[in-house]
Amino acid sequence: MERFPKKNSFGKWLSTLSVEKKFSIIIGLIIFVLVFELGNFWLSIKVVSGLRAYANGEGLWSKAQKAAYSNLVDYSISFDEAEYEHFLELLKVPLGDKQARLELEKNNPNPEAARQGFLQGGNHPADINDMIFLFRRFRHVSYMDKAIQIWAQGDEKIEQIMSVGQQMRAIALMPIDESNPDVVKARNAKLAFLKTQVTALDNETTVLERNFSATLGEGSRSIKNTLLLLTVLLTVVLGGFALFVSVYIRKIVVQVDRAKSEFVSIASHQLRSPLTAVKWQASRFLEEMEKKNPAADMAAIKKYGESIYLNNQRMIDLVNNILNVSNIDLGTLSIQPQPTSFTEVVDKILRELGPEANLKNLKVTKAYPPQLPQINIDPGLVRIVVQNLLMNAIKYTPQNGNISVKVETTPSDLIFSVKDDGCGIPEQDQGKIFDKFFRTDLARKIDPNGNGLGMYIVKAVIQETGGKIWFNSTVNKGSTFYIQLPLKGAGSRTGMKKLNEAYT
Figure 1 (cartoon, helix red, strand yellow):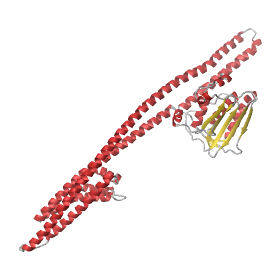
Figure 2 (cartoon, rainbow, N blue to C red; figure 1 turned 180 degrees about the horizontal axis):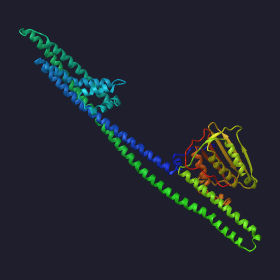
Figure 3 (cartoon, rainbow, N blue to C red; figure 1 turned 120 degrees about the horizontal axis):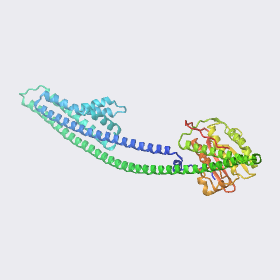
Figure 4 (cartoon, rainbow, N blue to C red; figure 1 turned 90 degrees about the vertical axis):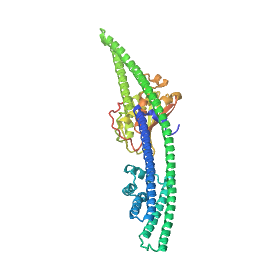
C-alpha cells in the first residue's frame, strides 16, 4: 500500500460532509448563479441603454448640424447676424459631444466634465451615466471603436464648417463699394465658393452620420444576439442545475431518512441486548438473594452482579458513542487546540491499557523521534482517536501477539501508526470499515459486544481536525492504521459539544 493515501475524489469528499454542509454548498451555488445572472442582466441593461442613448444623441447631433448648415447658407445670402448667432448656437450640440468624447479618451477622465459635455449635446441626464459606462468599458470593442472613430471624423467636419462660417462672416463684415459691380461680383464669387465647400462638408457629414448609425445598429444587433445566446445558455444551465438540485436534495432526504431509520433500528438492537442481559441477570440475582442459605450461593450472586455491571458499562459506552456521532453529524463538535505533546498522550493511553495487554501477554513496542515538538491539537479529541486504535489493536490481536506503535514526522506532518498481527480485515469489508455500526464477521467472533461506531468516530474526528486516516490489512496477518496530522496544528472551532471517551 502507498505510504501516503491518494486524495479522495470530489464525490467521496462530498459524501463525508454533514447534510447541513451539503445544503450549504447547494445554497451557495444557487446564490452564486443568481448573482451571476443578476450581474449579466444589469450589464445587459446598461449596454442596451447606452446604445439607445448614443443613437438618440446621434439624432440630436445630426439635426443640429443640418440646421446649422441651413442657417449658414441663409447667412451667406442675407448677412443677418441673427442667422450667424443661431448657427453658432446650433453647433454647441456637436461641440458638447466632442468635449465629452475628448474627456473620456483620457486615462483618468473627469466624469463631471464629460457629463457637462453630454448635457450640452442635448442628451437626457438620466442617460449620461450609461453613455459614460459604455464608452469607458467598451471603448476598444470592435463596433464601439469604429463608431468613436466615425464620431471623431464628424467632429473634424464640424470644425471645418465653423472655419468656413468664420470666413463667410469675415467677408460679410468687410465694407465694400456696392456701386462697383466688379467688387460685388468678386465678393459673391468668394461666397459661392465657400457655400460649395460647406455643402460638400454637409454631404460628407451626412455620410458619417449614416455610418455612425449603421455601426450602432450593428452593435445593437450583436448585443441582442449575444444576450439572446447568454439568456438561452443561462436558462439551460439554471434549468439543469435546478433539476440537479431537486434530484440531489431528494436523494439526500431519502438517504438521511433511511439512515435515521437504520440508526434507530441498529441502536435499539444494540441497546436491547445488554438490557435483556441485565434484566435476566438481575432476576437471577434476586432469586439467589431470596434463598434461605444465601451464603452458599455468594459465588453465583457475585457472577450475576459482575454481569450486570459489565452490561451496564456496555450501554454507557454505546450511548456515549451515539451522542458522539450525533454531535459530529450535527456539526456541533467543539475543537479547542492547544500545544500538546503527542507522544505523552500516546504513552498515557498505553499505560492505561497496559493491564489488558498484559492479560493477553502482548508485546507492545514503540518508536518515537528523538525530539518531537508540541503541536497545536485538541488533546481530548486526539486521545479518543489514539485510544480507539490501541484498544482495537489489543482486542483483535491474539494471545502472545505483537503491537507496534510508531510516531514519525515529515516537514509538514506528523504520522502516527498502530500495527498489529491480529485477525486483519477481509478485502471485501475494507471499504466499509469506517461506516456506522459496521463490524466484520471476524471482529464479531472475537468480540460480540462491540457497537461498530468507534472507527466512524475516529475518521470523522481526524477529518474535522484537518488530518487523514488510512490503513492496510491482510486476513490473519494483521492491520496497520495510519493517522496524518499537520504539524501546523488544527484550526479551532467553537461548538456546543465535546466528545465522550469510550469505556475502557
